[in-house]
Length: 229
Ligand SMILES: Nc1ncnc2c1ncn2[C@@H]1O[C@H](COP(=O)(O)OP(=O)(O)OP(=O)(O)O)[C@@H](O)[C@H]1O
Ligand SMILES: [Mg+2]
Image (cartoon, rainbow, N blue to C red; front, side, top):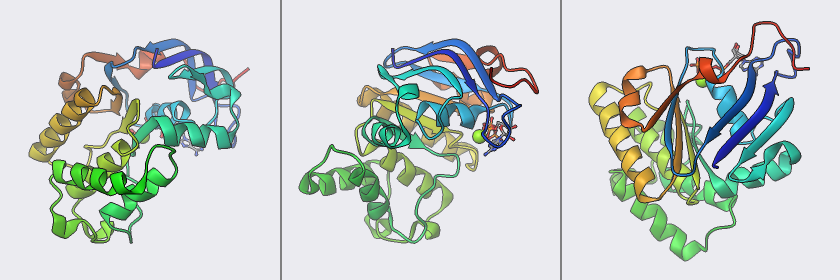
């Protein structure tokens, strides 16, 4: 299993009386491409942050790629994320004053995968593949278009050859043609690299690209104002 959750509860430390997630059981098989939809504020980003170890659960078992994140400390979870997970954030989280190449290179420094000679070639391949023209490779990312930033964010998520790729509404700022291009590209890269893909969005029209579609409201049994016990 790529993802296996059992009796997982999560409440933000600042609001312990309100559980955001309460998941009895939820699994995703390796190489599955799954779309999870839910309204704004329903806990999609929170779920992804738990699965990637950015947040830690308040209780229960969180197994990702066969490893128990709930038994790791923050440092171990950070290492795990760097080595195994690609994450395309809702707001991309690129470093604004660095160019595409440097943004991608930084992600690779946290991982144990690469030697530098191969790395430059891999970065160049990815950027070309993602249609970022060479003239834009070293421009501060704040000066790239939103669509270009999105593609740099995918390149960064793929550089460490992750087994699991997590994408948090990455098309929300794109117009229809760019959104279609982005989705086709993401799906073909996930297929080509044999990656398990977990994509969340409120936009049901994107579900057509996926083998499996789950509603967060079905996965999450959390009731308003109940704490994690
Ligand atoms: N750092 C935080 N501290 C306390 N509560 C938070 C924090 N971040 C999010 N929440 C709350 O957790 C709930 C779920 O938020 P989350 O960001 O996971 O939703 P979402 O489904 O990703 O929404 P959107 O579609 O708008 O991105 C919301 O009620 C939100 O207010
Ligand atoms: Mg969100």
